[in-house]
Image 1: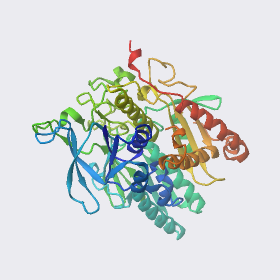
Image 2: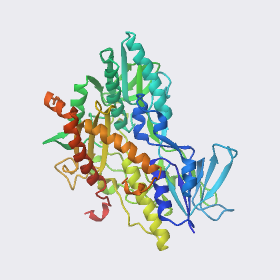
Image 3: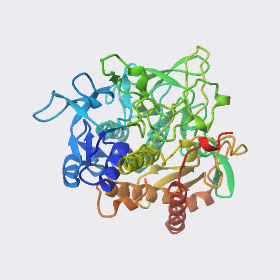
Image 4: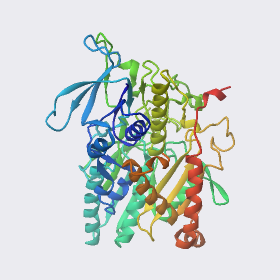
Length: 485
Length: 45
């Protein structure tokens, strides 16, 4: 009998738990440890943040589903890792603290045979002074509660505009090294569309602020793609859309301080500037959770497991951008020191960024961190689960399932406005996610046949279809496993 | 700078044309995403 403990019940943790439970017999234990009581389909937060979808539509409680499916669930947060156990406990374990119920505040040693760390990122709002969701007129759409608050803030600004007050709206990244530009991009287009719907578009000045060097970088170093019968850069596509919608942009901006209605930032020229706003949505920096790890004798071995995020089978040797290769990126997401620990999704430490690193004239690093969105999170979680299943069934280590982001495609279906007939979406696929400049030297590291963009109503339908399909899949309804990650 | 022409806008918003686009995009995305993934190191030179 094996016991697999999964930390986190987001896209990655939940995908791993569901596949493990489906393919392993009930004599094996699957345990999910998460402080969150609900599963949330994060990509639809955008629509919650513009008031077009209720947050109840994108969440469901985990406990009843897990009980029904035979997955053990502990509503607790991981505190520290003991991958060798300790003097009193031979088995490796995670020390976790319950956050709800009668055991709230109590700590438990949760032992495991295999550990999947799918804790995702910490939303590090504290890295930017004054950036607190719902304060200083600045909001976030990173969680459904944040998105609810964002809609409350936006609704108030819309009412003010209807009363004749002009407004400035600022949307983008809230830190020099934020990632998830795609979410902010979706949000700015949806907000613009909503202002049109409310007949107040002419009352608003909308500005995109980002740590990207060029538009459409998205933390992926930009994309060269097929668009109809043309080949175009993602920067051209985004510029075309922003120009069409009268959205201004500020690039290479490291937002470093937020005051009530003022965003202060440094640009790549080293200038300190500020931008006033009446409503802002700024994506924070992501960081590791600050977990500690100890060996059997309680010596601190945190550096053996973590580099901010958790260490996996990547090549972390520091090297210049020109020497980066796809081979630097992990394939199996296995921790090299403790082979029974796997880290899919956003929780693994990337070897480096994907976008070219840039410094301001003051020496401040200003560039996006690498994105690891829903699709790669799901794919890496599934392959980790499959390797564990193979290992349990064969009785020996098995790493046959591999999925490097340098050999994996992804689709980004960005909503550009809600509405079954009036909506819009920007569909961008990229293959591979991490550009392979050796394989595809003439197309900025990407396969042009598999990297394409499309804009139109079909994109909205696609995003809506994915919303319903992935919630159906997450609820483990009949034949859920037929829906790919 | 590229601009969205009236013809492009018509195509983007026309539900009839977009229905076919939806089918084509769904298939293309399925092929790319479900078309497999793997390692990279075996091909390292």
